[in-house]
Image (cartoon, one colour):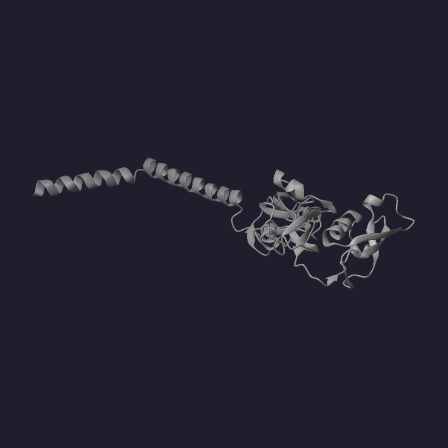
Length: 275
């Protein structure tokens, strides 16, 4: 046991002498200094690279035009990018309608702010085809899901078809009924006019033709049993086929009978009150 204890003491003394030797102490201190310097430099570099602790509040770009937002971003530590563009009726082209990150968010500097802006032209969407005896209510719902507005511009008495059956589809003053079987596309957000059937009434009421084109008025009158009377054109009328009705006699919704003639007053341009 004494011999083992002496051996352990001897080894301990040798290790102590080695560690306390001036050369070993100098090398260890140098190594620790080097490692500490590397650690400090790495921490400093990471802070600079990630801009640790440097954050800024995101400004509100919604409501600005893209040009205005770009000018505003130049004086701030942000970059702008357009992520999407959509058409919204009534909104000015280029207007910012949403952003990500949202306004007043705290983000690191040099962050990219993604914008959604309003596009100049609406998307084109294909209209549902007509089967030939389509109900206006059902077809209108299909159009509304495509962001297309619908309205009934005239009703024609017809005892052969159910009420509200579509007879004609009108888009921008042109009849497109026969085109709907060919994947016909129109601008999203626009309005479709419809001529539909109505119950046959022995006490017919004079239809309202004001603001319609002469072509539309002829179709409605002939379909409902009325006749075209005099065509009174003002000085602006150059082409009767593209003229509009600004006045009629008898007046709309007055009692009438089949074969009653209705006088139509024409003007070349669509009256302001009809726009």
